[in-house]
Amino acid sequence: MTLKETFEAMKAETAKKAPAEALAVMLGAKEELKNSDIPEKALKSGDSAPQFKLYNAEGMIVNSADILAAGPMVLIFYRGAW
Picture 1 (spheres, rainbow, N blue to C red):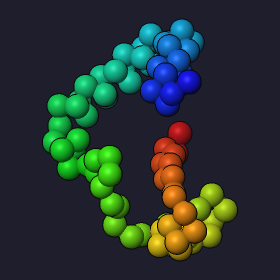
Picture 2: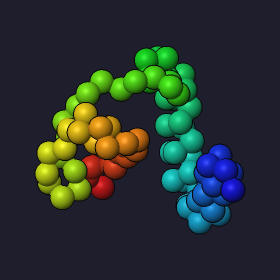
Picture 3: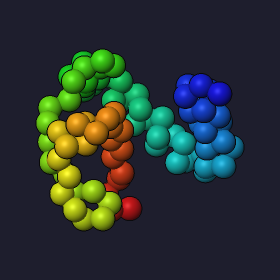
């Protein structure tokens, strides 16, 4: 299964389980994002991200340059306070 197929399957599962009100909010936010200038400013596939230092899940500061020196890196952002 490709990544796109995996995301489509996840989206279908969410649509089945989430309340209609929550789906409406998510779809509205998606449309607002698409209609903003944020997508044009975002990094594109193949772009290089600037070097950075962030806290990892264990509260330790990690340096992107150190991680990239060891191989490819995947960066995931989690929403803060729920």
